[in-house]
Length: 140
Image (cartoon, rainbow, N blue to C red):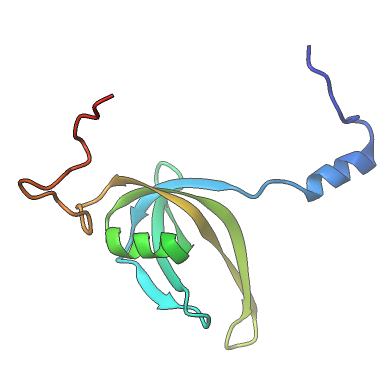
């Protein structure tokens, strides 16, 4: 039996819950180009790239993904055009006025984590003979 802490008929409780909704997106796709790296005014690394994903059987969608700090460093070192990844983060809408004064907006993902699905191995160090690989037997 499930005990409900909220009354589904109480509209004020419902409005309060809607205000605290979780903003989380998970998407799998391929990079359309190599990541672009730049630095914030505070000197923190920021990496962004466009991710292609299947929007329907016959169409492809594109969304910009932005990574910060350590994740930005990892993305710039290991990702490349065509790499297949999973991204988890928050969906963010960016607003601006175009040159002709018309308000515009787009969506982007502010990445919290990246899962490497298929890459060409760029940036991953291969162990040379005699170097530890991290796969040694642990004596316990």
